Amino acid sequence: MIQREFNDVINKTRSLLNQNDEWRNRYEGYALKITKNLDFIKSVRESFRQWHPLTVYLNTTSAQNAKKTVVFDLRYYGQTVARLTGHESGKHKLSTKGLEKNNLRDFDCDIQLNGVDWVGSEAAEFRKYFKHRKGPRKAENNSGNEEHRLESMWLTELLKKGGKALPHTKAVEIGKVRFPMPTPISASNHKSVKYSGVHGGGIDIFARTGTGGVNTYLCIMELKDENVKSEPPKDALKQSIAYATFIRELLRSEGGRQWWTLFGFNGEIPKQLILYAACVMPSSSCNDYSFKEMTLDIDEDVIKLHYIYFVEKDNMITEIDTSLKWA
Image 1 (spheres, rainbow, N blue to C red):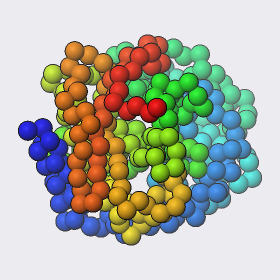
Image 2 (image 1 turned 180 degrees about the vertical axis):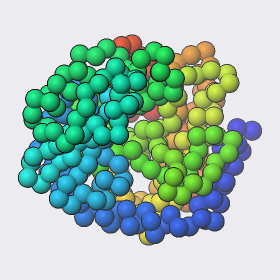
Image 3 (image 1 turned 90 degrees about the vertical axis):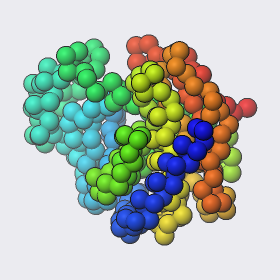
Image 4 (image 1 turned 30 degrees about the vertical axis):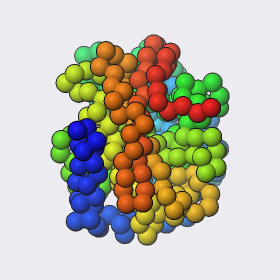
């Protein structure tokens, strides 16, 4: 029975998190440091323009270390091509150090920058190169990058002001910056959830969905670039359930209240926490609707299962088939 398989994922994940509880203090520390730096991160992010198609991301380490400077990843179709160091003074710097080899291999970009002014001519030339470049990686190097491209596309979609393919759903940001939410578990292989500590996995798309207030829920989405028999939706959903289980345990831990606020909520964590877990996949003949409206229990809390099947063209979502519906 499929529900039993899903419950097994929850039980396995909880067992791993209980056996390896070092994550509790570590993530509480993350939340404390990030919260302290949040206003500074916001002020720096608001002090410069983001130039499409390049987008800035903030990882956990940078968010914790954001004192007088904050380091952002600058990504193109989901792949880091430079790092932007935002300064309290407003004199931001751009560098490709350590990324030149991949930039040349994947994008034919031989521009090398070593801490140049973000508003200077060299940085402008770099941005212009990617603005006029067509598509993601070179075809022969594109293996494994398709999910990065789709992830970036979905984040862009969910951060629109209006006219979204998925209404009432917004990507979780930290300090108004895209934030890949880390986890201490690795669920990339749905058959074997593992505890990986500081080298764990990450949630593909982490969002809030709902009509506002108490009717808004965290949604943990696992994205795949294919929807085929060998990797069906239920396998992607198992990965999403594992990460949703971690988020549930995180919010019920000592640092949970601060993470709840960082995730964009006001007030206390509900007595019954409702989380959504969804697979996000290209629409195909393998679309699976069997788990629609299925609910999994974790003590007093629940995980509700959803599907999001989509069609895209030219890096834009053109059609969507989903159980996430809001009146």
